[in-house]
Length: 570
Image (tube, rainbow, N blue to C red; front, side, top):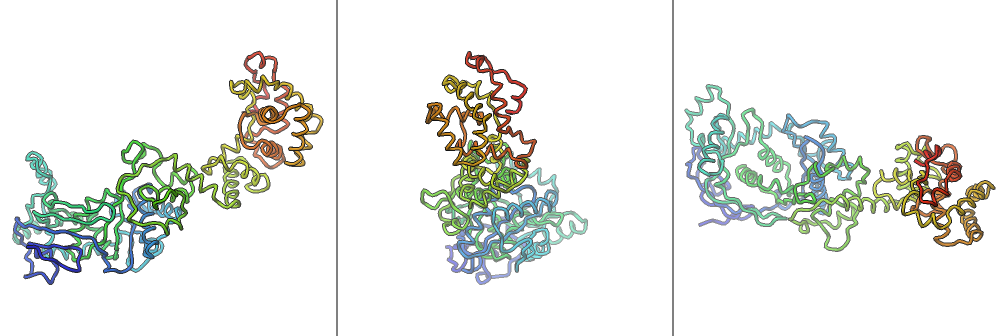
């Protein structure tokens, strides 16, 4: 019968004294196992620091850019730690020496900092549980590997690569799991010494029970169970002396007193090996929470073929960290209300691991863009203006990033900006004058047929007389007063007045508020506002183009000839 062990995360232990706590051992374990060992256990996750403070970790591999999936995992760890008053640890898993680079590590750190996910312990910060790079912890791994060797819970395996390949082939022919057969699990001291004397390379393999199962209570996925007979004795140290991933992670999490392991569901199968290592080293297990994958719209795993996937790419595209954080938080989590707009501080207050969904979350780039726009518009006016003004100067559109023109342009155009980079397009659109293309479009036909030529002639006369330049120079109020008087003289009002004015003065059928647009276009003509190469068409140049329109051909439905001055409209 199974006995109940209180105060440990393992509720039932039977048949394997070597995996039981010291007070249950009846004898010193012998390194020579029977190959018919068996094991039955139910594991129940519990805090590894015996009810102490919450400690979580994000452990990226510096082999590339920070994927949005990794960023969400980091965010959930950060939110959980902050909501519990705990510690957020950053650990760099750089044991893949061939692919890991300090450049990638620096990029990951930069992306995390940009998102606002400041870590309490880790590279650049330090802490009591360092070092925080796996490549600097090899002595620790070897210490615990030797401990397992001395206790007999791992053994030296001298199998060559060819032998291991052959084992897999035989297993495949017999339709069995491709697990290690345990050739060196029962080797004698003399057999081991012979190989050591010959200098035969060897790995350290962990002894896995042949029978039984293991269960954990995952905080997101609920009860998860594995049969041990599908695993086989696995390697914990390679022949070159380097530890394998599962061994490093277990030793690191235990020695760093990690209480909760929140990670992607693709790591769920690793939990079986790690749980066995925890028990063999008598480490208390942390609580596990495996977050669902982020999926593409076709429900496949999100990858580069679906577009941008790294945090750095979205930063370069003009996304705000606030927008990214808000959107990533909603990929698999919600606060139970209809609200979707959260600041990082609000997320900390609202977040709970119990509300994380175990089903896959669809990455919707359209919604991300919309959400970024909401955060952009929610910025204080001065911050938004500074951000967009700097963008316009950097993009080579304006000569200066601040001033009355920038202030008024941002206020006018902000509703059309979801990304900072969108501001280029909306400003260039305001400064352009595509009159010929507009007049030639079918959509402009009603406006042309509504005696547009007469309005154009009256506008040209008002410009030449100085009325329009004078009104524009005085500002918005004077311009509105002039438009009202012009409408009376033309016996037009409402759409019949404003549509022809918009077409003739902006060169477009649609756009932001017309009066403010016209005044800004006039201001843009002042020296030192717009960079000459930006393609700006000044008010003077617009009226020059208006004078050259062949209205007779246009009214007959013929194509509008593009005069030499029409190049200004592009």
